Length: 389
Image (cartoon, rainbow, N blue to C red; front, side):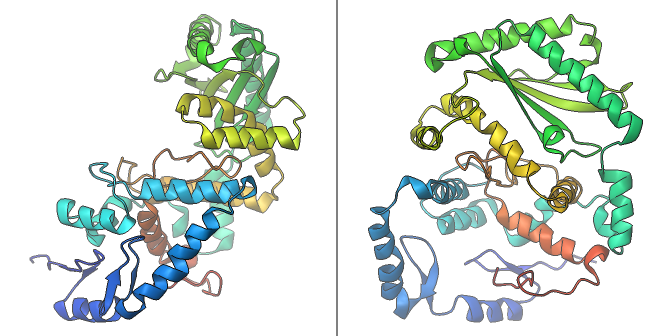
């Protein structure tokens, strides 16, 4: 049987199974509306002038009132807008999200069905197949939670010994060592455990001449680690300019930990003042050097760890479940479908590098809500899903 060709809305890219459905959609969503040239939003033609006055004129006035206290909100909006206006196929930049979406539809035929196809990839062993909270708990205990008991104790001992080895192999004396990652935060899973190490040294106090020293120091650390007794269990990753990455096989190679090691000087110190923290955020916001911004942001790692550690256990469980959902429900990550997640401590950083894929995330979320795990869950505000999202 020939597949039925979907009817595509040229205005928003949605697909429909019939011409009648497409016509009804257009009458309900787009008829009588025009696009605002400033933001791309669809508004009724007769209300376009009111929209411009109430939204854009007010925004212009509020721009002069911005101060450093709402820096996080400003950065979130600026970064999300900048990334979301880049084509997911050819990386061409546009002035509005609407123009980007129209370009994707017309030039790349990036319709709703294509978006759904490229974003969804449910694996057979997925927590969404559980049929209730008890079954989900058993699934999490067996498939998601990290090892406990003697295996966990052995793991802690091996990781601790490796951390001491790293400090000893680093060619520059470290005044302080900061640890982070899911392993330290308590959100690691059976198949995913990250350990971030920041080696702080006063010798790197000036960023411009120290970049070469940083690279040389990390390269020396790489070679020194390979020559140790742990070298046969360290699988070095791809070289990067500012970090050393490798996987460490732990507890008789039953599992591994992903390490990322960076070095810099102690920008904030162990007990920074509020003014010093504010100065760092201002510096990150105004910094035009991505390397320098990345290095300065290392000082925020302890606050990232504290942010998660201070959360109740159910929040950490939710983080683990979300990581498993992302790993087992989405198609393989490509340049076109990377999600966008801002660091809650440093909103100038997108954890997922580049993003314009919230619509793909929403599609997978809709499909996930149809799975057995949510079959008996009542949809109530604020969790009630509607097409107006």
